[in-house]
Amino acid sequence: MTDEQWLVVEPYMATSGYGRPPLHSKRELLNAIFYQGRAGSAWALLPHDLPPWRTVYKQFEAWREDGTWDRLMDGLRRAVRQPQRAAEPTAGAIDTQSVRTGAKRGAVTGTMPANK
Image (cartoon, rainbow, N blue to C red; front, top):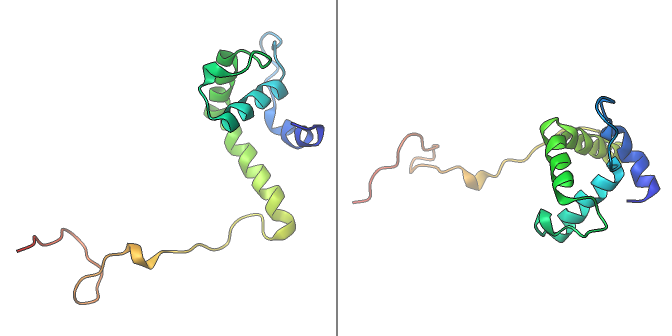
């Protein structure tokens, strides 16, 4: 992760300030999580120059449970969408082929009749 990227992501990686000082920085842990995502391998196969895999996985789970990943993705989406358009999506699409219709041009509700 470059310094510029870290400056964007760092505010989302806040700590409570309680407990003993961490052995690994949030940036190191995030780099390890991104490496695992790119490699697509098992957590236990992280290279030895990264923090221990159990530490990385524990932090990944903690961020997932406390909503850090959701806040990060929402913030990054807003930052990317802001210059181009509205920060929140304003439209959606419905696939008309996914709705089954009956013989009389009406949506089918309930159960389908058995084939004879």
